[in-house]
Image (cartoon, rainbow, N blue to C red):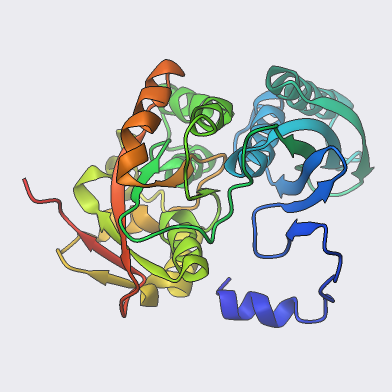
Length: 328
């Protein structure tokens, strides 16, 4: 959905005048100042991206927690929001979904304290409450500055791999690889960047890399040079695209965001597809000054976080995103 469309849809939601609110619609989370610090809340819901119900539950919770991690927060409590067709699927499937979500929440140190279930086609959502730890800052999407370096903490291609799973095109090895990636929490990356001064952060999910970069660029009033040859992809994405594993979300994202992009070096159709690939439980996009980038990389190394330097922030230009190859 384009930002102009979103603004139109949400125009009837009144803007609160509560001075304690520091983040609202347009951010990844709702955040407010409380007596004992900053509280952050978010909610997300997804349809099954894998066949295994336990894995689906774990992925749904990992995906929902990413918004909190992107703000520099620590998730603490969660509520399950589950849709399940009780007349057409066995309750054992539902039990496994809940087990997967429970185990991923426990890994993150989150207590599941309740929830709600609806009789409908399978979906798993998670409403999360967390806090910004003492000494840390709330990280918005509007603070990116010219000169900032842009890092991404997971490779792209998740949407293509999950589409391949749905179309029975993925090998066992490919399924295992993408499931492992989606189940990986963004906890360590968030823990690392809280030790340094970063300017902006968001997670990469359904709008794809270009969609989320555009969001930061618009809110920060900057443009971004995106380095085509530095973006990491899952290893067999191009083969899967060739075999027909192209998610509908790629075409929707391209329609919504391609006018924000100028290609300074040519891309193949497949390479361009990857920029719009919708991610489930994708990585974090982190914007940091050159002076702090070395400290960030050191913290990544301490926390065993793989990060890819994929771009640089520049003054606002006609195009919000300019793609190019780096000069060797």
